[in-house]
Length: 302
Length: 123
Image 1: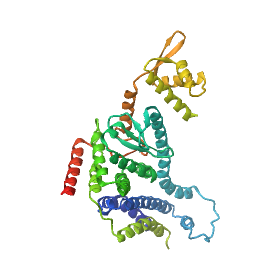
Image 2: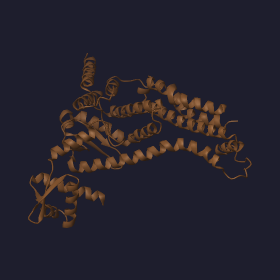
Image 3: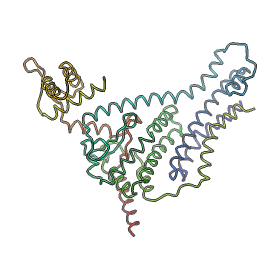
Image 4: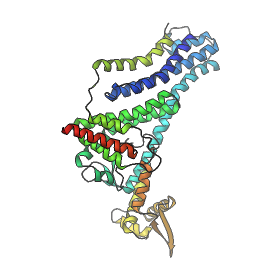
């Protein structure tokens, strides 16, 4: 019971107390790749800790010693433990299936969301066949639409789409910077990160970790793509392009939920940021790796 | 197969939009056959699909159905792009925008941040 409480406390810490702290941390915007790793570490840790908590609760419910041996063999620690004669009871099945649900829930959502996104992309590609044309001079599809916009369709039949409005307001250098940004998304498969965090927040709706992770990863992924652009393009070209595109497509109606993301990105692009100290790097990588393993040690340890 | 159907839909719509007049499936067939051999029944089927999707309207002239687009290419583009870009693109992972939509106030804040930075670098 004490183990279950310890694990539950750990899950609560990771699921509710840690996210606001990581959201506010200063180093994250200076090392977005590292920050994405840290958020993923928290999400994995939450799943592991919650699954083990549920498992322990189910065991406590049973007051059965077999369950403990079962757990040991699950952890690979009691491979040579005497095999119990009795066939698995429905209660054993419950003890194993409850934590399995915790793990399978986000996975199931991920599969479903991926499938939906693929279908939506397919529909969008069909639409582009109707209204899109190859952009002169760029490796992109241009659509005759007045509002400036640039986006990419990731996946197997990847494509970058620009509107005529974007062609009108952006100079050649600015357009090339924007296209590089989109290519970074496609090549680094950022849509998978979006899908993962979306699946997580659908599996655990209302969890602070889900809300913060979704918000932050969306922004961090943009920063990663911005950084890629700055390797080969000027800060000025990217920053001006951001202003032009963002200002041109001012919403018709309900939007404005975008928040300060665009402004944060612009300030970041304009002012060169020192990369975090190597110790920070090592610390975050070590913590992100250790955090999901800790509950396993607690649950399976002596 | 589905892919090819989609492409044929696009080819038919392109022609009807470009011609700017109602046309029969046979008119389209004649034009398409200049590029590759294609069966009348295929063209007719896809035209009917476009009709059921609401992209084409049709009426009878004599014994043949005459088709024409329900809206211009510009109207179609505008409505579909507003749908694709407006609000939150649903579902997640469909398309990734360069920058999200912002309010006019935020746009002003962006511009002044850019101006301030340029002044700094000029000074």
